[in-house]
Image (cartoon, rainbow, N blue to C red; front, side, top):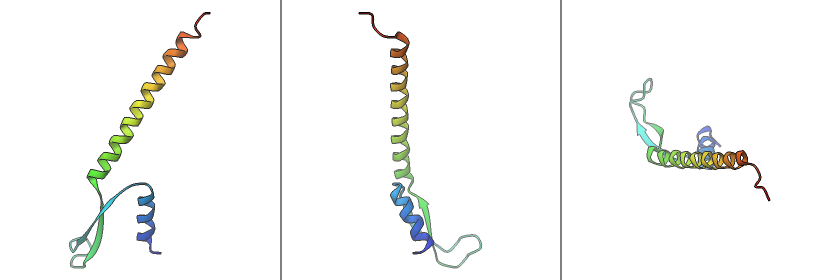
Length: 76
């Protein structure tokens, strides 16, 4: 298995998508046809938005728990 295949497999398992392009203008490799990869920006933005929503929800729940703990147990 090549290094590229291993990286692709790891990124796929993490849910990170890449887009593949061919380039002949990479610095130091001018004229050679090389396969290049870039992060799929639209997919990445969606994933970041999900993580931000989850973090905000965790913070809200933690704040609610803190408020309940500050009030203490209700008196019978």
